[in-house]
Length: 299
Image (tube, rainbow, N blue to C red; front, top):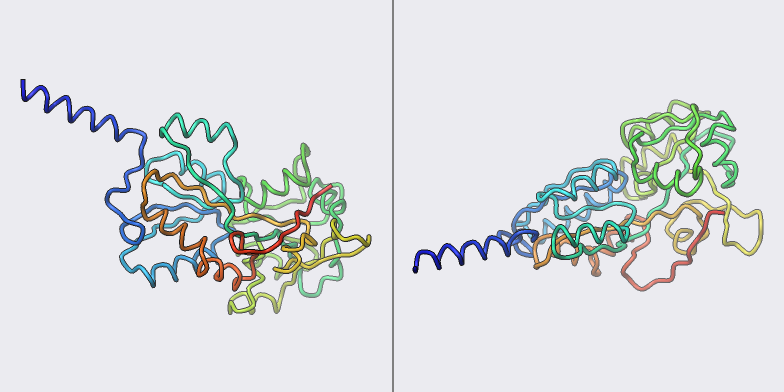
C-alpha cells in the first residue's frame, strides 16, 4: 500500500512538471541558458552579454544568431527559453504556447533599431522616398539590391510587410549570408543599395564599423512625420526617437520561464539602467528608459 502511494506521488510530480520550463538548475545570475537571436542584433547583444557575464561570471549564455524564422522555430523546443527578434507573439501564438506550456511566454520591446539603406561612399543617389524603395524592391526600378538573407530575416520580413505588401521581390534583389556580407558587397558595388540594421553600421565607437564607414554610408529617407514636406532623415538615435526616420525596427525579447531563472536575470539586466545605457551607447533608442518616441508610419 505504501509503495503504491509513493508511485502515485511520483507520477503526480512528473505530471506537474510537464509544460513547465526547467529552471531549477539555474538562478537569475548563474547556470546555463540557450538563447536564439536575430542576426541583425548581434553587435549590440554581444555587448550586452559581455557586460552581463563580467558581473555574473557563473552565468553561461549560449547564444546563436540566425534568421528570425529560425529563432521562432527554436523557441518551440524545450532547450531554447529565450529569443530576440523584431516582433512579439501574435494572439494565436500566445494561445498555442499557453496550451503547450500551461502559461504564456512574456515578451516586450527592449530597444529600437532601424533598417538603414546602405550605399557606396561615392554614390550620388543618397535620397530615397518610400515609393522609390518600393519600386526598387519589386523590380519596377532595376537598381541592384542586396539583403541579409533570403529566408525571412527580420529585415526581409519588415520590408515585405511594410513596403512590398503582396508583391514579391524583383529579380534585382540578391541575398547574402548575413549583415556583414551586405556591407562587404556594397563596398565593391557602387551602384547597388543594401539593407542592414543600424547597429551594424551606426556605432561610432566600434572600430570595425568606423573602418567600414570609410567605404560605405547610409542614405537619407523621406520623413513621414515631419510637418514640412520634402524633408529627409538619416537613421540615427535622434531621428528614430522622434519618428523622423520611417523605418524604425523594434528589438523584442520573448521569454518562457514560469519561475525566476537565468533568462529572467538577463532580461532584468537589459531592462534596467545598465542594460538600457548599453543600448543608448550603441546608438539605439532604449525602450525601457523614460523617453518619448513618436511612431512613424509607412503609407
